[in-house]
Length: 168
Figure (tube, rainbow, N blue to C red):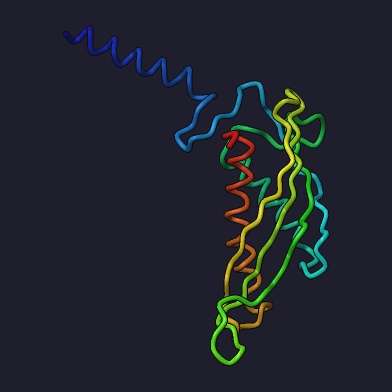
């Protein structure tokens, strides 16, 4: 009986060890063949965007992939490349109130991403991702802009990561 329990533990351990590189409990999988990635200098094609928004986004995307995958950052001959443009940074009034006032303003950011898998071109894609955050109309955008951008980027990064590594 003790020998059988040891055998079961050994089989479970070996299965976990063999599968460690190809599946994660977060629901994404990254081939063991992929080792490196690169994030290019995203362009800004949104006149109202802060001047350093592309650098903030690039760094956030780089950190997300480093933290949540086994991939290493490499500038030369990367297996995967993320390239793109911040194509929208728009503020508009939402939630009208009586008297032609609005209760909230909405900041929406759009990012176009070109994903290149240099090991398998069938995995390449181009997509545009967008997300928004509302803020009270009595607040100045500049006062809340950094926290809004951070919250929007959190969702955009999750969407981009999922598209890249879960094929949704």
